[in-house]
Image 1 (cartoon, rainbow, N blue to C red):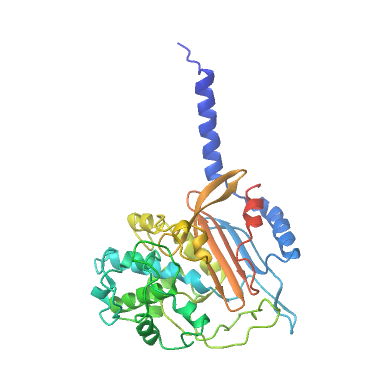
Image 2 (tube, one colour):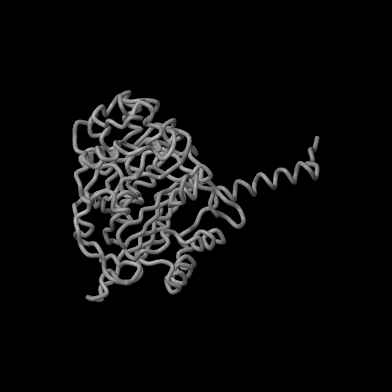
Length: 366
């Protein structure tokens, strides 16, 4: 007996196929010239600078560099240039914290007073590891206090945290969303306590070495071997200076290739179990809960990453996770579309929009 699909059944079947195509549409190596045209246009419009990499999982589709690494010496940026990743390093801290949870050393519901009794904030019993990871602690940001000149730059980390323990919260723990570097310094302290080693030793042993990230490291200066000069918004070069060298809130140096290895590993079992990735990629905080406008507040936040619906194919959007990193003359972003494994990494040695929305919109047309 022959079976025929009704018009309705055929329509449902075609829609299902179309949806699969949308979600898993892949860029191919043959698209590299089109991508190059898109990025050159954005560079000529002054919207990007530095290096960029586009990949589908492990397969790099496109990588290139634009502009000058040093205007005085007329040196170009290259795809091998090392750059300061700034707050993108919070993704490392989130991974290391969830590894502690998997090892049974801490739980997400633990108050920080249980693990860091020396942090004597009056509300330390009410602030949990979950609150720190998702920026829901209410703690004031130490960098914000430094910008206001209410806190000195370059104080030792413990002294910074002691001073932050004396300040009132911005809101009750768990009731708001306020991006704060202070919380990630505290997570760095928890990691060092239970791994009995310096933070940078831990991330090297538990992330960089296992993934072959051989060009990622930390130093006390914004500059280092193979790095470019950073330029401020007024066009002047950023003066070399030692940063605070704090542990947990970012600041490492890396390359496009190393960060690509890290982004490929997000979601697989090289670093965390599936249930931990699910927690990391869950939307815990929302922009409408933000007490002030700043960076990560424009997108929902998980643990150490924004969780976003971004242009992917045509008019359709797909779920992506990522993090930006802005600093003294630099601005960067790395993201990964979860279902398709598409990866985009971009660094600037000029203070520009870390990831121009036009780039995502144009890539979605391919």
